[in-house]
Image (tube, rainbow over all chains, first blue to last red; front, side):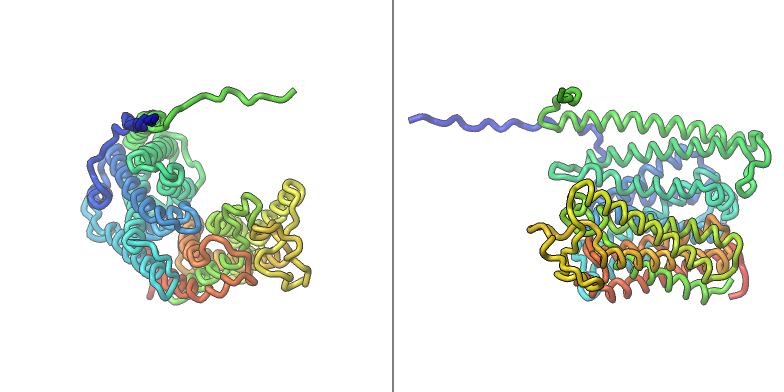
Amino acid sequence: MTVTPAVVEEEPTKKGLSFKLPLDETEMGLVAGIVAAIVVVFTGLPAVIKGIALILAFLWGMDSVRKTSKYGLGTGVPSIGVLATGFGVVGALVGLALAKYGSIEGVAPAVLVGVILMGVIGLVSGILSNNEKVIAMKIPKLERAMMELGMAGTLIILLECSIVTGSLNFNAVVNQVMSTGLIAFMFIFTCFGLLHPYNACLGPDENRERTRMVAVEIAGLICAFLGFAMIILSSFSWELGSIVSVTISSPWKLWNGVSLLIFGVAVWAYFFRMFIKACMDEAYETVGTGMIKTIE
Amino acid sequence: MEPILIIFWVVVGGLLASLGAHLLPVGGAPAAMGTATGIATGTVQIMLGAAMTGLFTAASAATFTDSLLLVALSGAIGATVMICVVMLMANILYTFGCGIVPVSGRVDVDPLTKEPQAPYKTPQTDGHGVPNVVFVSGMLGGFVGGFGGALMYFALLNYADFTAGTAAIGSLSIFVPNAIIAAYNIRGTIEGFHDPKFKRLPFAMVTSLVVSLLCGIMVVIASYLTVGGTM
């Protein structure tokens, strides 16, 4: 009688998971929300600190997208990321309009009213989407996720406006962000920052740590892009789209832009390398196929 | 600024966006393999593309006219042209690239031209390409959606007194949630007005009404605080 040898289960090596923010989804939401809210209120902070808050806000939004999309939306992951950005721009408009009320030199707490109002709209749309009698999507906790997405989207757009203009003045934002067309880039980049991490990583072996690396990596790229935009904006004086003078109008903005560009590129390079390494380590085997052979 | 007019046109635009998303031929991932009718991508991408093209034409028209109808119609024409080109190119690729005939999967006889559909359908699939009735439905969808988007742009530009860039991004941002809620209502794929899923339209309309009403109120707040004026 032959004895079949017991199958030796190979322990999967988890060397790549060095990125451990020790926070679960709820804690991450609270920490990111509070930090981003504090940073967005103090408008005079250096751009790099705003960039760190931006990364946290993207991690929060990515978590919300992930826990909703896990159940299958029927329309693909991109829809919920674009929804969050759409809500975010409307909320940011209200927040910017409110910013001048009750603000003292560089502190604008009224901005957060826009975030809260957008949270309410997100909650209402979540309740209607999940209600049995209306759209009946039947996704657990969709109400909370849509509320979080509205708030995270608004905080992200406000932080990006705050980084580029250095203030939350409505007219400054209109002149430097809306009329220069920067908002179109911001819209698409924010969409991708929210939807791409889960959209790219989803599958049977998706895990949260690896998906978060992509979120941080894209947030780094956005920081680099915003830093570049700041450098361009600081060297010209913009008057509703036409170049008036080609002088360095604001050295403060120039140095902030340079530091943010360096910070963004460093974050992107570090996390891109970490992500590729994690994929290589967690895969069963990585083999090269060589070039495609042509038939002669 | 006129708050009632802003809220009215934003709500009308949101409802039209929702209706437009229901009329478009959305194929999703199955259409990318040629096993479902429609354009091979999600509602969001098709509707966003159509709305953006519509906003470009509407913004061009708004620079030289103050007529609401003219701006809205030019937006509608822009979106229709974009959707028609996409549907035509999809048909060319499916027929000459994959060698399959455009055929509807949901009806046995085309409701408009009375052409038989069932004999041409490959078994186990859900139709292919963009047949006649779906093409007409898609044209209507693009027209209605572009009209709605341009109405919102006009309201934000002239009644809320935003600058052109702010009005464009604001109307796009209100358009997008309405189109996405409609996409959730149709669960991914739809052929057009002859599809059984089209009967779910009232549910999306209710949600769209509430969401665009709230967004309209947000726009009124923003406009009142920045531009000022009499309520």
